[in-house]
Amino acid sequence: MANKKKNALPMVATVDEGETGGPDSIVEFRKANDSIGLRVVEGQFSLLSRKLYNVFISSAQKQQRPGVNAPTDDPSAESYFWIPLQEVVKDAKYNSNDYETLKAHANELQNIRVEAENSRMWTSERLLSGVKIFNSHGLKSKGGTVWLGFSFPPEVLQMVLKPTVYTRFSLWYQTQLRTASSLALYEVCRRYASSPSHVTNRGKWEGWYYTITGTATTDKNIPEYKYFKRDHLVKSITEINTITDINVELLEFKEGRRVAEIQFKVHLKAQGTFELPSVPIINTEMIDRIVALGVSRDEATQIYSTYDEASVKAHLELVETRQKQSNTQPLGSPAAYFKTAIKNGYANGKPSVVAEPVPPAPAKKKKSLRERFMIARAKDALEHYQKLSFEEQQPLFNAFADSADKSLKPYLKKGLEMALVRNAFGDWLATTLWGQPSDSQILDFLESETDE
Image (cartoon, rainbow, N blue to C red; front, top):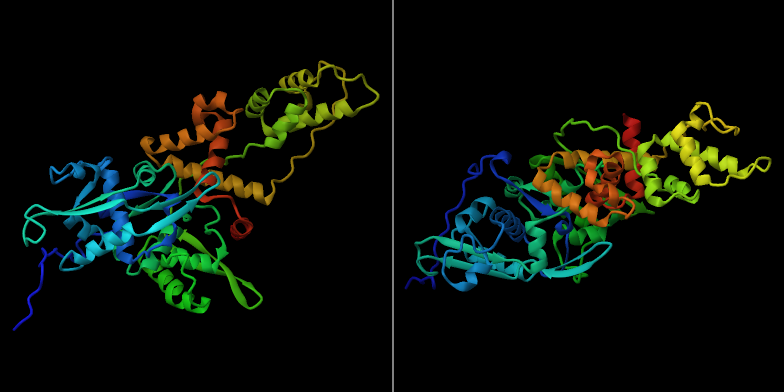
């Protein structure tokens, strides 16, 4: 007697290779930078579970609140986001003839626990708090409309719906990538494609192994580097470079004959040429020198933002030299003298209203490599910001305002029109997008300067 299938489930239509239409045919979604390259401490990321999670993020951002598409009157459905299974099929490129496998991978997402850490907080979370499957004709029916419901833990929900600092992704590219490692590496590298150094963070290859393969960090049974490179790195880089909008290059750093650390160089295949003026970084050391004369920090910041940096420096030198002279009458108020001097341009060759010797302004020193790198980072960050919509820009500026130094607070209402605010924001945004610069990134930037 022929075996009968138990509990036959509804069939799910598969998607044709060309059905998704191309990179521009699917709406982009925003993925918080803090959720890219997560450390898995429990569970395992597969290719389909990674794809599903991105589909869930994209769908939740469209709906903006749970319960919008709830297909049932069950009260619990109101706390879930709902998406027709056919959309999951299309956006995850899920080619199966039933949803048992899909259910298994959705359940897999619930079992994944991740850790994230920044300078202010350590977080351990499950990616999903719940998953539901609903069929209008009954779960065992071969007809009806099948819906997939999902919910996020509270902290994850905020990161999904309103990411402050994020990278844009198109679901198109994830439908084309064939391995979990390729998708994981693509997400990490895509974040750094607009960085001026065009390199990711540099770290031990073992750490990259966990990030790229999605293996839990508690699993210490990892292969030798040569096998990790052969089975994951080379294949993933080849696939990414062939299919996606970026080119990735592996950089290896050895200790003796052994590869100890790696990082990745990333370039967009097509980049815009929108130019912004060079953005200088706030010189806090110079502001401290003004404060040392007796000027309040708020007023010192305002003076720095009002005058050319070279002029501020020249007048600081003027007052500091005058204070050191033993053959002249001591200044009663260095602060008042400085403000009068810079207002009247004593160090700029204009007649002095006070009979004081005026030393020539020192020659302007060439900016250090680090300063030039930070300027380029801030410029690229502002260029990225300019391309965002107002709705996307506002939470970024609000986050900057909340963390800004108190000396900047009086000027924030003027926004980026004020050079002082624009400079500080550019520096903050670059650090928020790409983290603190490493020595290798700065040296890579030097190479790009040399090439130009």
